[in-house]
Image (cartoon, rainbow, N blue to C red; front, side):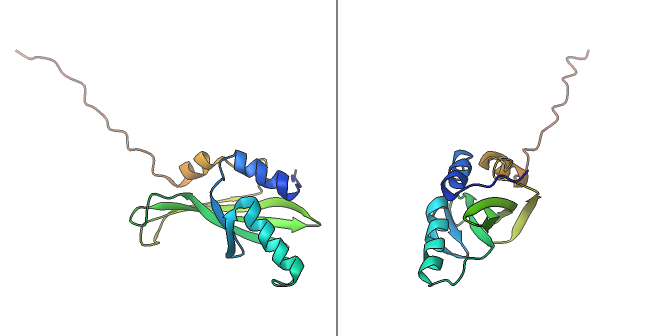
Length: 142
């Protein structure tokens, strides 16, 4: 079931799931999720961008610890139809400080309701902590 939402509802659901950082819509319009998409649509309305695309690419960082550390990026393909929005696909990528891909996950058949929380999305591309096997103590031998 696709969850069709207006921009306010769409942005609120994702923001409540932790997508509260800054994003770009169609490679421009930096801002919080609602503001970025809203500014893009406003530019379309004014004629600066032409007609709005039926699928918008919204990108941003889910985790950032500085330029010299690995980071997690998120790309969302948001369908836009008759003033309603729904999430169709999401890609989450972990990259090193040089932009080289470390791990990638693609989620399809999503809706804004079934999209993972930010913590869960980051976990998809994070290396699970290695568990060490501690040898059993054999006790004293005589």
